[in-house]
Image 1: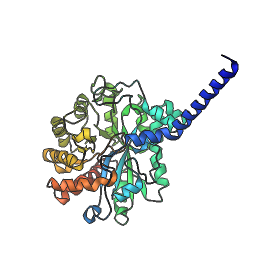
Image 2: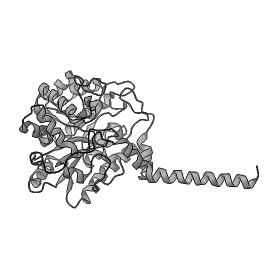
Image 3: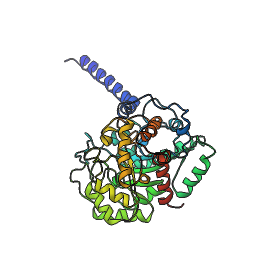
Image 4: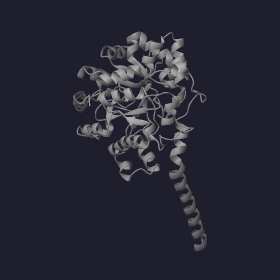
Length: 391
């Protein structure tokens, strides 16, 4: 082969590589999000439902929007949550959870920690280079993003991190229904990077609940979807004790049954499950057993019911409402809330503007309007007013 032909081949490959790089960095992240965070129903809420719009406090326990390279101050026609759509939905408080690592081929049965999709996503989003290699740094970066959105929201959005700030927000929102808020949680304690001292860093960053595991076992605890699915490790026991002292709330979503048993045995603190379903209504490894549901109820915990098919064995508001009815009947209407898993690389029933459909479905389950207001956010408000640190 002549040198001229070889040179032309090299140039062609260079052009192809350049195009691939442009596509990867310019469009790859947005394309992946649009293909991941879908909805079953696209036509949702139009403002003007006088009863729904009069509900004082609507909230949701779990949203992964910080994972994506999407400005939450801007209305989007994809994804599930942004501040303008929260305002449309009369939403007061959304917990934004930090996803710092997920395995390739993610599933609810068995995953190892050998691969890292979020590292690739961080690269595609042109995040600071340290985020590509440090799970903790990328998690703290996501936390900081929420504060940046608040700073640029023209006073429409604030971050809650204490009983005092939540009460002040509640008072202020009485005269400004466009005011919205967020709170930070972690989805998986692996981003502590095997150090208890990291807990202080995340507390200072505003994190107020931590899911001990996500889709794989870690150095603290076993996941319902891990390889071993064990319980708390010796370090994990120290972690839950320290969290209790700091008024950091334990989230049992994704925890293995053994981990849930161990947490119940090692702390007296109220706990929550930010996004789940119930095995009695939808039997799979992802969901919560009656035995654990009852124990969490005894602790005055809070159970967030999801808005996706694996959680509730259905793709509409009625399916979620049926599971909510089951929890309310089993442990009390004051212990159940919404745990959507919005923007969690999953197909939900609808985006945040569809929440009025949940309220209507709850009416069909014969809940009173006072009970519906508790489920739609009152229980979440009361739980955090009681269990967050005072200041």
